[in-house]
Image (cartoon, rainbow, N blue to C red):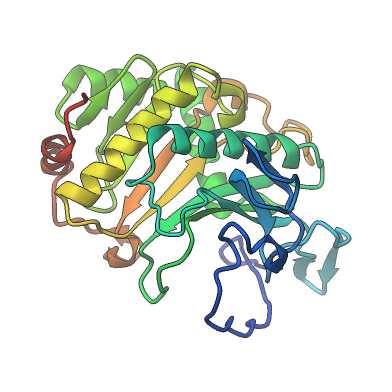
Amino acid sequence: MRKDPTRGQWVLVRPKAKAAQAGECPYCPGAEHLTPPEIAAYRKDGPGPNGPGWTVRVVPESDPYFRVERELVREGVGMFDMITPRGASELILESPRHDDTLASMEPEQLEAVLWMYRDRLLDLKRDSQIRDILVSRRHRKPGVPPHHPYSRVTAIPIVFDETRRELREAREYYQYKRRCLYCDILRQETGAEERVVRLTKAFVVLVPYAARLPLETWVLPRQHGCSYEDAINGEAAPELARLLSGLFRALERGLGDPSYELLVHTAPNLRSRILQGDWATIRDDYHWHIEVLVQPERANRLGGIFISETSPEVAASRLREAWEPEA
């Protein structure tokens, strides 16, 4: 990994892997021998690890960007900075069913996926050399053929650029106002209502005020907390699963099943402080949440400024209309 000193951004330099040949899906039940040994799994029955009977299963990526076996080395190359790609690249197989999507899964299955997100974050953050972890999920990515449903977990020895910018904005807002930026957003949005799509006891689904894409959607917990893994419990998990299920069904059945990317925004590994004062106020100033970027490949930018052709108020109205009424 090399750092661009003019922008403060990191670049991963790696050879392109050979494309896998089409054939039997290595992620379907009965094909467990085609993947590396599993990292974790939920099972109701079956012979045990690395066999069928699982409901959610975690395996290493076959061609990982980051490996936990690597030694972490930071060094200078003249004026430049370099760091070895130590970390983890994992796939969370969300369902035994090859054709499942987040819209077709029952909320109970999606809830199991959310619990696995929590388990992987807790496990990976025990490693103090891992600084940040991204949980993401793509649907209908252009150029990628349909495949077994999975989320990706990427753990790295630095803080992701977008996370760093988000942390900085939240910290500066808190330093000035002594309030959480996201809690203030929640108060204003729930009061105004025009960009709110769904409001429940524990969560708000909304289209953000300055949405980068027409149907960009955020899911914000109403109770303040900086870490997803600390917030997911027996009450929050089923409620969040029902909300996400409703959102993805609205996108699929009411809005043409567009592509999307789901991103879990949570605090970095607080055990990995490098500089004195790192994360000093993060428990007060940062607020975990989930962002869903609909058709991210269609983002339109001018000099870094996003241009959206649909107002967030109109987008929120379209999502409300497409949302199926609860039984």
